[in-house]
Amino acid sequence: MTRLLAIDTSSAWCSVALSLGDSAPQLRHELVSAGASQCLLPWIENLLAQANQQLSQLDAIAIGIGPGAFTGVRLGLAAVQGLAIAANLPVLPVASLDAIAAQLTKTPHFAKIKPTQFVIAVDARMGEIYWAKYEFNDSTFLPLRIGNIQLSKPEEIDLRNIQYLAGSAIKEFGERLFVNHSFPSEALDPEISISALGILELAQQMFKAGQQISVNQLEPLYVRNKVAFTTNEREIAFKKGTR
Image 1 (cartoon, rainbow, N blue to C red):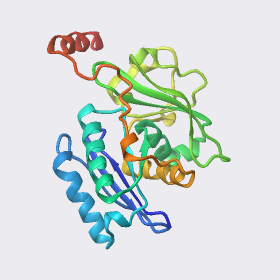
Image 2 (image 1 turned 60 degrees about the vertical axis):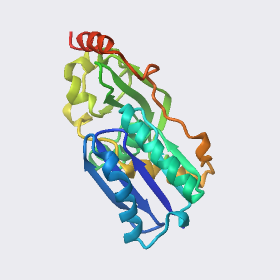
Image 3 (image 1 turned 30 degrees about the vertical axis):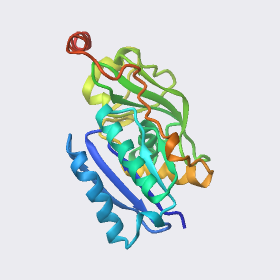
Image 4 (image 1 turned 180 degrees about the vertical axis):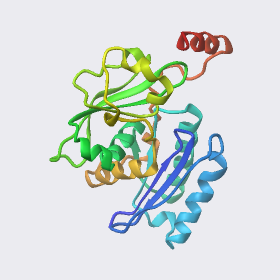
């Protein structure tokens, strides 16, 4: 029985899931905006108490490493570093877009369409998007990412041979995504977002494959090279993104 705690604070959602084997995981998942710093540790304590478990009894902690909101990503990693060191546990780093892709393939709507190639695209702020391509078929339990997670303007997304598009970028940028490719409405999912359940889905397979790492190896996945911007740089980027 694999016992995992999964955490994600890379978006406006604070999300924590606890899995103790074959039973359905416990989940706390709420839209908190900037309030994750107050919610995260109490939620973890509460889920463990409800399951009558100590943190040290778990096998590993899974964490969403981004890309996403820089403050949220740093918060999640800092919390996991403290927890993992205190309980002497390994960690399982999961990219946020990979977690969304794993969640997407479990939805009834996706299963009805049965696309073999799809894209996850999320708002990266500053007029840009994070996006990645995936392959999926009935013989694969989880989607396979094709290449690296990309950062670009919405118009620069590569949708060639893609049959399905999902993520927050659809609502945020609309037609700017569809300059060179159009999709029927049934091949779009603008509502799906990151959840600890997606983190958990991937982490379970990673743990079985022995891909857990020491907490001192844990690093964020920012994708955008420059994390801090001056006020003037932010204003220029915003103006460019709204042209």
